[in-house]
Image (cartoon, rainbow, N blue to C red; front, top):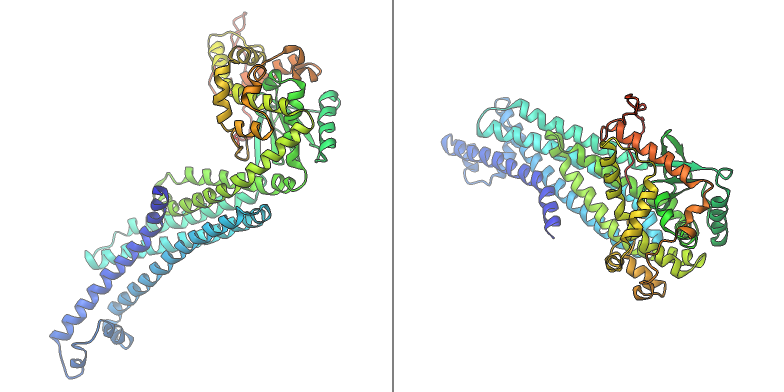
Length: 503
């Protein structure tokens, strides 16, 4: 409620200030008019002595050249008042339209698909106009107030307000237009071909065939502890190679902790988003949804500077309101989508395999940052790190205690594009309970690890660990390793692509 109240105040602040400035100016001139009538009464103006202030406007309609400037200022102040009211009403109307549209979209997948993207573009156009209007109101309102109240104008301050509003409006439009562009994400990993990893590709294609889903065009294996299928461009480092179309991302460290049956269930869940009605969501909705969130982040960063930032604040607040409202709509539909995808994952493996996979992912993902921190400290001590993935699996095996299972069950699973239900709810929807899984939930058996699907997992892990070390050197987080001969390990050229950020 506080956030919404703040949005209302932010949206109303400039129009109200413009209205008050207009009221002050028109009241000043009407007061002068009344005094002039009283001071210079003649047979022609006696009729106006007791007239309403509107008589000043009647006089200005036929004013002589001598009084034309004063009348022009009075008329402009009246226009400022009208513009302030119209801008305020338009802003509130936009909020109401967003609220109603989001409520309608929450009822139906097709409505959400149909409303979100066009609605976002309409909002951006209206926001562009509102920022320009509020900038004009603020600029002219300050000009009028200073000119009448102190008989001086700070032209540089007023010009800065106007320029800030203009730049802010176009910054808003530019960031908004980026929403329609194909988004990309950067990962540290390696794309694998069918020839390189035939067993893993055969498993993925078999799951896709059984589900009747689209087959991924690319499989990328990386170090980040996550699994997802995406239609966004994936830029794979090192090498900065862009892979388009449907891509399945698999986490090498997490594969060490999952059995083959558990990995199969996870792959089934992810590929289920590329079948039936879910395909439109995965291909059409979520790239724009993620792009909107990213554009909003850009706007937040740009709003930190000067008058441009002040001009952008109402627009950013409205865009945030738009995202919050549609996130609520998506959450209900997304919950159903995830539970349906869980059923698909269980169907190609087993409910128990998917349930234990969910618990392992929830329990072990939190170990990644400590593992990286340990790697950084080791490298700073000039000690090599050969295989961060195997070290991660060792820490996971040591941390698999029953105490964390309840915590994981209540937590939501991190994902690049949407919000998943709590893990406990997902397990119950599979017809299982946490109590049934206590004994086997976090077991890690190296002999049945899904990493054995790869032809040479250790070689791949060591290659990606070295790539991670070089990236840390490039960022200045760790120094280059000193070789035994006293030579320094050279750092490669800095990659040109943007750093990875989850959508």
